[in-house]
Length: 340
Image (cartoon, rainbow, N blue to C red; front, side, top):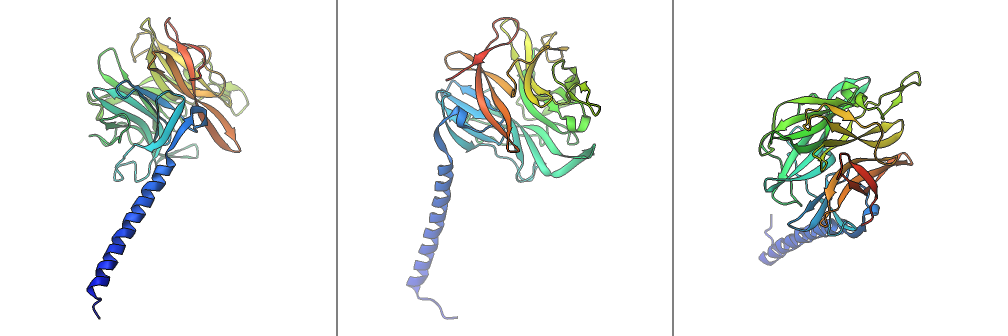
């Protein structure tokens, strides 16, 4: 083969490098173009929103289903979405897991990402004709609130043969950290709310999960049976723990009244996760609002963040909303919608 002259060889290499740099720059530019700025909250499509108010950066960080992150200085205008969750493609989650109901929690000088991960390529069970995918609550960690959030020590937090979801975080009266999560109704046919102790650095779980209450314990959620008669709804969704000014432990959680998505509250008689949990008689939010959480603004106002829920042309349409709430008494009271 005839050797090419030296100059063209160098020119070819230079052109190759330039092409690579151009492609990389183009890819970066395309990624940057996906980050939107000055987006009003009600223009964001997001399920299961969760807001962390970070005092150090004076920034609000919002995440939820999809594994993306939004940032805001004032709750009114947002920037994003940023990809912040990094998972191990060789883990049980697979190379491209679905991410649901992500939460951000500050704890012991680090930030933790509680989320539900689903590997749709792995079927763990079939119940009542439904194939159940490998799904579980898991925790990632970061040194900063905007990530990246990466895996820790334990490959799993909850049993591989159970579909679990919507894990949230709580330090109980014993001083130990816990994950509170839902054991999905698809397998047990009556969804449950459960807890499991976490390691001190949240890098894994300790022992086994324990039952807190069942979906059927709710007096307000209901559905129709095969004969068209009312029965308790089977769905447990979106737990979030809080404490009133009087020291009463409460839990927000969401289910259904027929085809209406609604949020209720349960209170622990013992003041601990062990309960017993007593359900409020009626939901606390308007119809088709749910999966709420509480946070304080930098002005010390207590707000609930949750999403509205409706179906548009066969697809769910979910938008984050804010409500002002009051826990100065013995119960949580929803004051009304809040406009930042």
